[in-house]
Length: 462
Image (tube, rainbow, N blue to C red; front, side, top):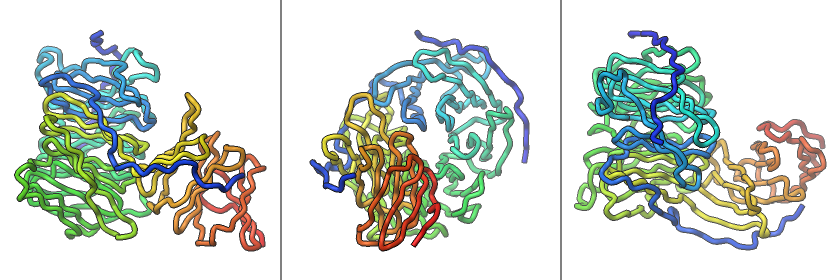
């Protein structure tokens, strides 16, 4: 391992700067998945090099081949832009390509990986139009080829020399996690942000954890894909890989082939060059030519199924994909400079004319008040169970939802959500919301207390 330390702090400005009710829902509309698609951005013949959504869902960053990063709000309106810079001004602005973008877990910083052997971290601020300040830079000995910023760990990046390294924005140091002899073509984080997969030009797929994970799977080489896995994702319990052979392969935890989707006889299909996973880990989008294929995990069938593909004529090769952290939208960038935004929605319903419930996956529901300017909550089963029922109760301040194995409770005003183990009980519970911090659940002669934000039952009394 070569654990070089990069200790340059740079606070110079960037030179940019181009300029209690149990009634059913009123309305229940089953929408086709990916029902809305619209052109967000079209910059002519300028490849979209990278796309990243902020974890707080407020900003979308898009970088084109002219090395300019545009920032959009959550509705897709362009709000800001700034130019990146080379490792050294003497090489000029055309001396490098941006290979990856990633927001920090708190959404306040943006990491930019470049082919001229450097990663810059920009502090972009919370307000639109704030000056972009470089707060870290990590100079490397080889070209950066891809990067991710783990929610529970450091910036992780791959290099052309086959090394996979980690950079800490707190210490301003980088170190080698492991070294291979093969160019790193892709990185994919898991949905918990505790680990990642690396895909290499020789087909090798490696699994690595940076943080302790209760459900940790074996580290090291998972599988050897037949072609370089440029399209790589780590959905729940599986590894999905695709490349130039027009096949999407799903590997199990042990690296054995679990499923395969073969499009090699389809003359309209081309290389599959990029993939991204939904925040819940239950769906994967794979981009190829004029098309995004979406594969979803069916908990009931215990297998992956392909949804109706999103066909976008004249989009050409898809070069970047990013799934919004609340699961509701996918941004798709093309070789010819277009960015398309499409929805990923299984179902919508309206609760008593006051709340919109958007099912973005089997285990994830967005709950948003219909009142203008209101912010909602993202309800997600941490175990990946399918959410079957969502109700708004307690003077519209609390929510109750069920899966086959758990009960989900939430304080909407404070955005505190809980998921506790709860055996099937015939839906005969009574809920009491008088206490501001604890929900009282009465069922079959037993009273259970659940504190909002805690995933364990506080106590029970019979």
